[in-house]
Image (cartoon, rainbow, N blue to C red; front, top):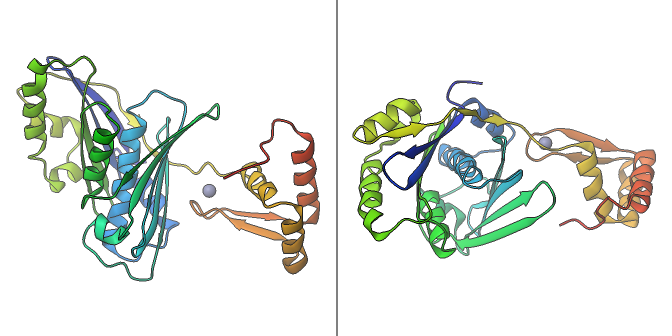
Length: 293
Ligand SMILES: [Zn+2]
């Protein structure tokens, strides 16, 4: 893990504003290597999505996973990024063999939408949806915060084929009108950010460069890692949802059921005996969910 792979949280001592900074390098490269990415622009979009999902997962206190899904009718058919509360990230890209377009909106094409799902450890789910009506992911996410009437939030995202970085500023609750000027002032400063600075400077240097007249309290760094949450049990649970007859038909044709994890490439294999065991456990274990989406 490089020093770049970390999340930092900070607050402005004299303003009702909090912030987060993230930079990913090794974790991004690891997430990337399992995906079929057709050009550097698509690689950068995956990087931005992973940086964004780390920032978003850190805006809420929860134990679970933040899932961001982008879908549309364009060349980029699906882009998925996951981050859990320990900053374990993974991502998935599906596209045509060539992807046209210089920005996310063009790549995702018509009917583009972004779905944000929070899956808590105890099984609660919260989901929000916003249209991809802006050119770039950060703008789409800002629209999401605005439409869902959450706290005023600004996001900056930058990426190339090797690194991705993001900055988030968010007004804290209870901000009066008098603080509006402070909020605007901080945004204007952050708007001077360049991709070069975001991708190459460390957090302290960047914050000093942007906000040197402000008192910023910077918290300890949280490491960001690539880690896939797939497991034999989870794959088995999805197989159960297919039903006995479907599973038996696959076994008859292929002799085994082969499932490759789309996030990390891990290979899972189930033969006749495994399938019987899975179905048996599903029938008798009341804690096992039988319906999966
Ligand atoms: Zn996996």
